[in-house]
Image (cartoon, rainbow, N blue to C red; front, side, top):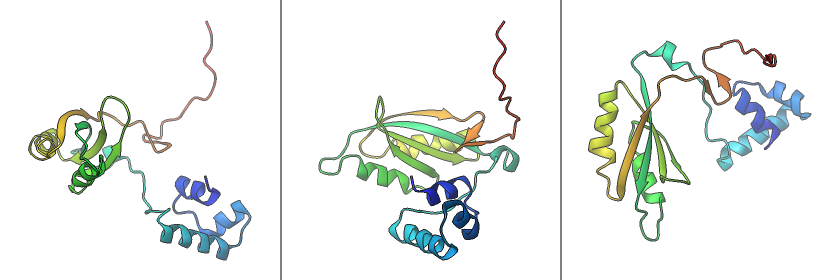
Length: 159
């Protein structure tokens, strides 16, 4: 991966000055490279990782396995585009294995997610079946410990 991208993935708020020092470039070169990445669509956006449990006790997240029948000449793309247009949907990913699409979505309660799956997702032409899994607790996300738990890096003691 590109060093600038790696640094921004670890800390999207890192300054051009700090990035330049880390990669051996000038601030102007770093700024130009970041602008180039943005224009080419390599950098799609900037985000944070929040401890949702501390922000909103009513937030419910679900991972939904979706089996579909791909459309001729379009494969899975048309169905993925249809699903990703719903505001509730956080992400859609083509998968290998026993299901085709992984859909992540958030809602205010389990019933809201269940209704989305029953009334919207499962009624899309080409959707064969769904399997919904609710997130019970997050421990680590995108490389960050969610609860700031101290990690004991010592080796376990053998009996």
